[in-house]
Length: 249
Length: 223
Image (cartoon, rainbow over all chains, first blue to last red; front, side):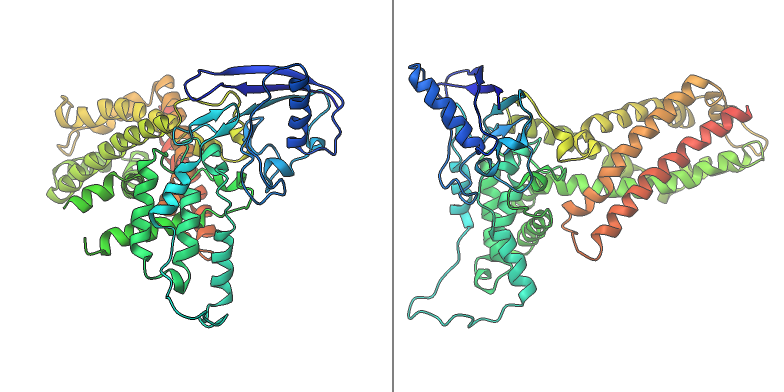
């Protein structure tokens, strides 16, 4: 397969950056999108040019590193996958593919397609933890949790923090990410100790980082590789407003 | 009370304000529509004029109307504040955005649709609300201001009816997202009720603006 790749190139955070177009031939339809970029980069290195910088790690769809905004959608046109699980058979031969980094004030560009998602780490640090008793290892299944609740909490916990929700959102809002993290803990007995404090602190940190507000477009959930549901955002709103009204200070 | 101002200026708090004022306006539209239907009564506007007098003189209605003006203003001002915040959250935009792949037209254009409604409000208030309060309107047979005649004259112009209908289409799209979105913001998302709220929102968004638009259209063809 043959492609025309329109890729965002930016030397560093201070650089203005611009698109550069590359022609790439001999691409197999079975290649993953990242492997296709690898091929391009090998050619660039051979020509003594700077390869395209991009984040990647596990290449099996669970680490959430491969942040690329492909043809107007985070992680490209395929639903429920990250870029590493997107294959070139999802594209037309001869197509022009536009590849951009995540665009958000809270995700500064490091270089080319690589962005700094530390803002997510700081949101987690603000309240995404639980108190654990010291002492011996507790028995498994010691605390009864209804299957439906466990499933719902697990669904929220499948969030890999890739940032596709922020990238997809017209407001660059992080509500889906933060709500998944608030939800997974607030639904379980282990998460009750910090429950109200958690919602307040994580939302405050989210605002502090400069993410936008939620318009409930649902773009985040539609583009989420893990299919995190919008109901989590409603739950976070309940948790947050309830905490604000009910807390002592 | 700093916790309250903290809450209401957070992203979630601002959306809460949008949601609550929006829901109030949704209820207001039904009341307004019910009153408008009296324009279609075959009595030369007597019932409508009596109703218009009641709506501008009853103290409880007056008190509520100040709330209405405030909620409309808050809804507008908050939406501008949110739009600025959201724009700042993405200073550099994308070259190519495929919004239709993941979200509805209305949800992505609430600001533009809201602006259409705002333009409509300015025209609407100038022509009818301002005239009723401060304009010089002749009296009808019952001794009430003949607002019906003012409305009838406006709706005899094809272009005025066309603007009215076009704005109601804008309102319909605004409501088609706004209705269910208001509940989601309040945290009302439930496997039993959310599907119903979404359907009700669509039905409301079609029925109410269509009913509003039908009145000038009928009056135009009757004139």
